[in-house]
Amino acid sequence: MCARKRLTLKRWLALGMWLLLVGVVHGQVIRGTVTDRDTGDPLPGANVVIKGTVRGSATDVDGRFVIPNVRPDSIRW
Image (cartoon, rainbow, N blue to C red; front, side):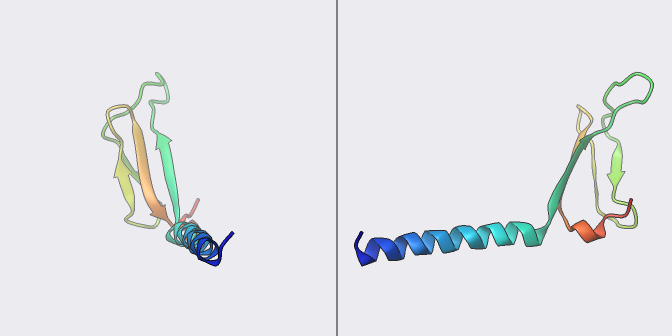
């Protein structure tokens, strides 16, 4: 393998590691589905909020929600 190809490979590996690090630093994604306790039907338009924060989301027509970029230390159960 020539020196130029090795340098390119090292750059791609460095970029991949950096992208992984950025993904970890920016946080996790919380996903879920809100359903009616009695019927099990999805609840569209329900508000889901992380306790103690103003971060949240509304459910879609199938009761699903996504809250992106959540730091693990910001969640209070």
